[in-house]
Image (cartoon, rainbow, N blue to C red; front, side, top):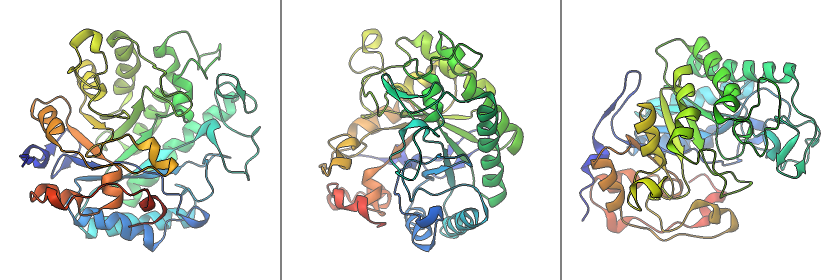
Length: 369
């Protein structure tokens, strides 16, 4: 039996303290009718809090911009009714003894919602991926309004009582489309040949959010190399490029980096430190000094994209995760599908009940277990 005690050590950074190292990863549920979280959503999150999750990061919830969500029942994080729904969620999580932050999102050019006109989408250069036009580049006014929308969402999160906020800057959505040279072809101050230049939009969002919530409120930023439009693309081919990308974002006010990989055990730069080398979160921590969250197929045999095609996954042991946590490669680990289908997953791991852990059934994608 694996000794998982390292996963249950308290975490304390300058602005955020947690009872253990396990984070519930943000997972799109598309189950908020009219964009308003209700009692089923609150109970879904509260169950994870009651059974030992250290920090819950909500599904992506969108800012006040036209076509900011890519599916019809993604929750809003603005306006009276949705914010009232989110108040019910955080109150339920706190009542269950948990901590939580909303993941603030704008889906950019990726929308699949037929109610939105493609030409109305926010994108840096009017494209969703190389060769796929979806409209016109964002104007200066649209960029300023979007930055303000993110800042307003952060202020609302703090006012509602959330313990932190996560900014979604990954997976080919809007902020990531500014990072990616394949989708950011601008020749103004929001573009550029280098990743440091293309990070300006994200840095401005972080600065405005920081100004809105104050110096002591923790901000998390989720980033990824891969995009849903291109699984193999990389923003940073070297540690030097990664530092140029992430360093300015930490300087702008990010406290914790949530480093998304499809498989957490894969080395980021194996040409430097070998096949057992640091993963994405490990390199991000080494280069920036910021605490990091790792994520990617924890406790399961295959990566999550197959689940959207109805594929299941067999459970896997946690030895590799424990080894990386014990050597301090990263600070926190986000668990996705394993927690989606089993709200008692953390409790079972903590109590050594590994024989009770189940394979992932994609049917759980369709309900709030």
